[in-house]
Length: 381
Ligand code: CAA
Ligand code: FAD
View 1 (cartoon, rainbow, N blue to C red):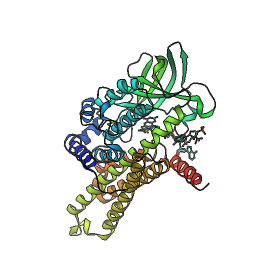
View 2 (spheres, helix red, strand yellow):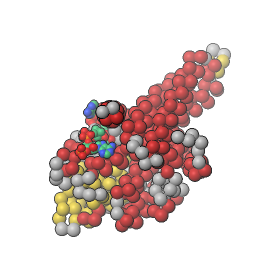
View 3 (tube, helix red, strand yellow):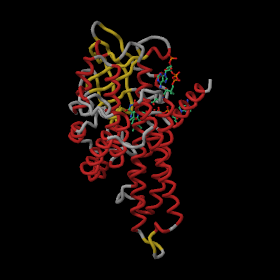
View 4 (cartoon, protein in one colour):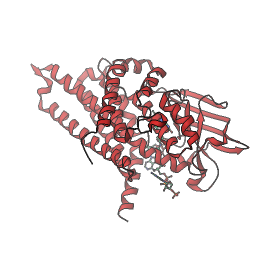
């Protein structure tokens, strides 16, 4: 693995960094307080190629690869985790449709995601009783003439109230994991209802809603991949998605570390900067070391994916380690800020709230350990 960034990777990282610092970071506190979701902001992100970083230029993407995507996610998350999760799910949907869809799907749906016309993408897998265990989903899709008719409800769907393009999973009959299929559903389709907006602890500027499908008829052509392949497609997409969330965790942890170093240089106690106390310096030394370990795990998973090599295990390792690391980092950052870490005058209380979900979504830490154990046992069979 080459640790020197290519010209393309540097360009994407710098583009994302500039946008994140100039257009996102100055507003992140307000976005969080007001739960503000800005379609315009996401259209701007799309215009920079950041809604399809690993999608060919032919379909409006940046064609810059997985490592570039990870770097861009780190930059966006360091400014605003809410913006980065919207970006992550949109990239994940665009890649899934690009890889497993038909040419017509790519022309019609991938370009809507990469251009910003769709605002965002949604990945509608989880249900109220089926998060870690999506095979237990109850949403159904029944073939009627030249349509599929969807009935059921999805829970916690990121960007669900805004997404012009969604991938939705449903039971279509068939044995075991072969009973689930994936469908492309356009926002605004009759029979698709946007439900309750979740009042979240963190990521308050991202949109998280329930979706209900009531006799929601979509064209038969909107089946993604083959009937019965849906569960596998979800797992494959989540392998890539977990690189995105690992990157998000690294970005938030980096912001927490940088804020801590800055604050500890300024804040005085007992006649000296608190950053001179060895107790705090050791905290920041640990944060910096663990952050770098998480970045390297994440880059390795991204590299393997980019090379077309198996990366399921490495993506789960990166997501597990990075998300737990970022929770340790934001906790220390609040501690280093003392009372100021607990109020919203400084951004670390937002980082603390935003990081918490990282060990839960796109597979909990327990699910990542199941995957890592399964893949490790396979390797040693
Ligand atoms: N790649 C390809 N195929 C895979 C695969 C992978 N990574 N993982 C599993 N499969 C295949 C298996 O080979 C198996 O195939 P066969 O039936 O042909 O043998 C089939 O899928 C079923 O596999 P398992 O028996 O391992 O499946 P399981 O039901 O035991 O579940 C699990 C395994 C890892 C726990 C899985 O259910 C899982 O990942 N759960 C977590 C779900 C999740 O991450 N949800 C996130 C929602 S999106 C989100 O959260 C977005 C956001 O926050 C922003
Ligand atoms: P459960 O599955 O009920 O788990 C509860 C606890 O039991 C956890 O600690 C879990 O690790 C543990 N557990 C479960 N099974 C096992 C096991 N076999 N071994 C050991 N421990 C186990 N979903 C989407 O589809 N699309 C989205 O866009 C999306 N966005 C989200 C955004 C936010 C802000 C949030 C909070 C969630 C989002 N989700 C989304 C849902 C998310 O993926 C699920 O919450 C997550 O997968 C966990 O599922 P659950 O909440 O049902 O927890």
